[in-house]
Length: 411
Image (cartoon, rainbow, N blue to C red; front, side, top):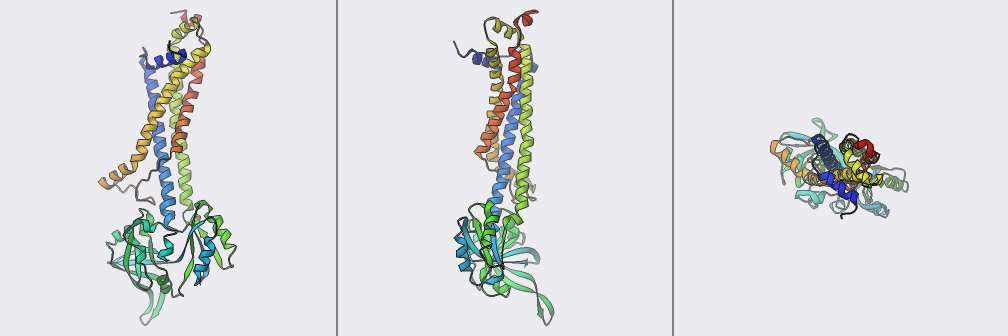
């Protein structure tokens, strides 16, 4: 005979057709609720993880994670760079000079943050070379006044590789015609496509060309650093500054992107909590369906008790029945959630492009990122299974308390 008997009877009850179809409907609703709750929770967590990853990899791959700058131009920046690079948490260093201006081309104007870089060093701290749509940052050479722009900006201005643009600096220059802003003609030698907001706001020129525009000696304003852990950027940069002369100061990504990162982190926590309530409601449905099953099966319970079944055996029978509902709902939800999480980026991209919905214009990336983390799947599945199991305890204990004589009195 099949043993244990409680598992056998519990599985039979789960598969059996009931005379009361309403009870079967409630059990089905419970299972569907668990499936949808787990699937949606996995999908949403994956999307929030995707935004979190894109912020770290793309946005923080382009903007400085941390910088050490001086009030004076650094003509001997290689010495400082080698000193900073010795810190155990610094993975890469590069010189930079930063200036703000406007790009004008074909009668259109756009604001731009221009970074003077050394291509040889820049690839150690930035992901730009890995996302070049045309040209290369190696084309930035001193005295040639080339510029690398983002694809979003070049598309908006209808520009391409080899076209010329005019960079307008906000600094005024006296001339016989009066005070005039400073202009300089640049040739586009590269176009990068990060797929983020920086594509329309950032540009790159040669380091010494930036110094020439600012009418400063050849050098750099500061040293940009890449960390082995971005969350150490603030502490490490402050620690390095303490070893340098008083005119040095440090900045890090938390000043420019910290609010965005914290907003994503808080939104992820709140959305996860709200969606977890769906799983909790489905677990309560298991309680109600099992309570009704116990009421419907009182005669069967009484017969089992008269045949020698112990209260523990009766408890296990109904715990098996509720657990089966929880397992099927959870596993189905996990499978659907994994499918949704791995396909939602492509589907939403197709939907956005096909119907021209502009769904992601308000975000710092131009698509819906999704990153499935298996540890999140394990946590969600485990929580759902535990809730489903706990939901069976009260109905099962109630079934064990059924008195055979009282239940069979009117049968």
